[in-house]
Image (cartoon, rainbow, N blue to C red; front, side, top):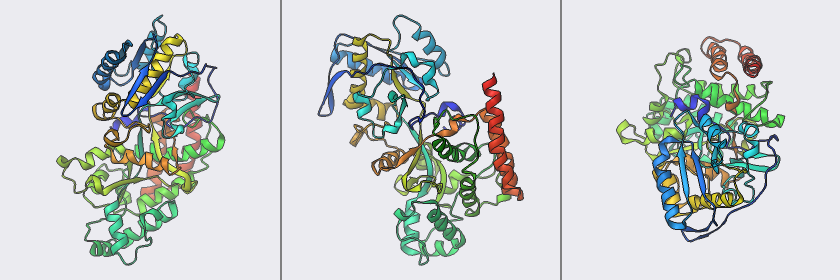
Amino acid sequence: MKKKLLSVLMVSAMVASMAAGCGDSTTGTGDSTQAGGDATVAAGSGSVYMLNFKPETDEAWQDLAKAYTDETGVEVTVLTAADGQYKTTLQAELAKDEAPTIFNIGATADCAEYADYIYDLADSALYSHLTDKSLALEYDGKVAAVANCYECYGIIYNKTILQSYIDNYEGAVVSSIDEINNLDTLIAVATDINTNVDAVNEACGTNLAGAFASAGLDGGSNWRFSGHLAGVALYYEFKDAGCDLIAGQGTVTGKYMDNFKKVWDMYTDCSAADKKTLDSGALNAEMELGMGEAVFYQNGDWEFSPLTNPDNGYVVTADDLSMMPIYFGVDDANEGLAVGTENHWAVNAKASQEDIDATLAFLEWVITSDAGRDAITNKMGLTAPFDTFTGEYESKNGFAKMVNEYGAAGKTSVAWSFNATPAVDDWRADFIAPLTEYTERGGSWDDVKTAFVDNWAKYWEQQNAQ
């Protein structure tokens, strides 16, 4: 999972685009109603053809298609593209007379390419059940596609240790975990724990080495910062510029690099790891958090399974863990977790109205019926962003659940704006080099900011000149 996050395939927008880009499309909904735990569907005489993006979910989708056909008589065909071949398969299938009625859009940048095929989902049941409307791709006031699953990242923390620090350490700088809702307070707490770690351990019976797990600058870990942490700086800059939060723009100013520095200094100053060894590859931040040696660890919901897997020998349990946003000192009061996906359902506007209606009814059934919800959560193992996934159909991933909690509290999810990074591997390497020099050998922060800004423009121009 970690390796997937190094690629564009791991990302895309769960946050709405702030720019226009798509052609016109018509609006309509299927005829379906929800009764109890299952949806009662009246889809007319149309049929459904789904081009599935995720090969690992093929069996579950084939079973769902059969169940729906058995229940309603509506024909549902599911074709799953081979791994890494989705775009070429989609292009070939859309050119056919019997084209997919459901297809996947990864990000807002895809909208222009498929503008003629995008059906407005604004009035659909699918969109109405979305827990956070920013989890849709919007263009020209139209809802082009709706996310069907998501992942998130932020600052993982051991709430059991943090609560013990508050309850038992006499010098605790906060009286409630809820007070840690902004960057300055987080820095104060982390600094206090790190500075007084022996006293905290004595008061709490813990085995902490420091507040934060190590911020590895080696190739196996630095994507957390050249990608994810940098992505928060990009998010706020793109938001200010009013541009597409995922597609980005050709130049950046580094407006929020001082905020990046403040967070980064917290990570490295409030950790037991020697700054001069962060690029050595000898550090294991997951283990540090898992063994109770650190309270905080920047990473994503893909860490929930390894951290709570008893075979890994960690001392933490699911009940110990939670996740907070990477507070950036910009709009902390409204900031939620960083949420993203490459999976958004789009409906083919060129299909017949009968097929469109049947397709919308099928998608509603998927997110409201027992069979559909069980398949999404328990068989596919996905976290769905719909208000119908409650009780036994709620995600089993404790970190993913936090997305809905922050959404319910009125917080705005942070887009995965690092998806816009041009020549991503080259840009990140050129950014990590001065960041390493700054951290390990007292290099200039101006060099870090220069790499962030100048190389962005350079690689963007090269990428778009091809």
